[in-house]
Image (tube, rainbow, N blue to C red; front, side, top):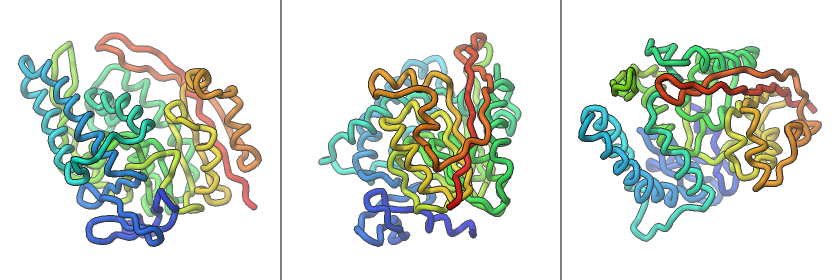
Length: 348
């Protein structure tokens, strides 16, 4: 598949029909619903109600984050400016998508955005992800790096022309690794948070330098990452429980640190086989406690629910644990275990 054919893989989240680019939007061939394209037409918002989604950011999330930045504005004006500039630009991009009559988005989207968008104020999370590429030294980076290499090794058998989907891609580090593994293929990264994808776009798709803030010896510092200009990566704002892709096209699907955030993980897992080709690979990675966190409110079963839910559509090829560290402060880390599992879709 050619790099410029990426839009032919997308589908309308309302009716699952194909979409085409028209007048700066993606338009569904069947129901005629339009979806906005941001960042020079490279990031579509393929949600059922993209206007409500933009409203949530512009009217609630961005103002809240700007207010939080006032705390460091006086003592660290240069560092605060990096965050402020990023938020203002994001607001300018989303503002045209909403009207004053818009109300809050769906409760699920609202809860997710309010809880997890705040993480983007922590640029050390971003820098630790890209540290091997940019040479920024941060505590515990080496321990976190094993997670990326583990996931990459599990998918190393795909062909150079493979088409890959990273569900819940965040800022795109996993997508970056796989883009080198499939130089003649495509890597689709999707996430519900535009704030993460916007950073991912600047780092992955452009060649300009991107500024980030981090702390060292309890002082704020500014680091720069030069963009990687990867033409075979494509990012989409989408809901994992309503995937906007045509079925049967992916050679590999990656699901890392996502299951514990979903409202209906079992329904999500059952849907994945539709999007994989026969003999396609599914890689799932998550920490050990995700099902325990969910069980009280969602009636989850047990760790074996992955095999039960995937059923006879998949064969498990391997499973193992990988340790990693989370950075809590400059000198305090917490060790976690991630369980990785590799499944293969059975052919007909």
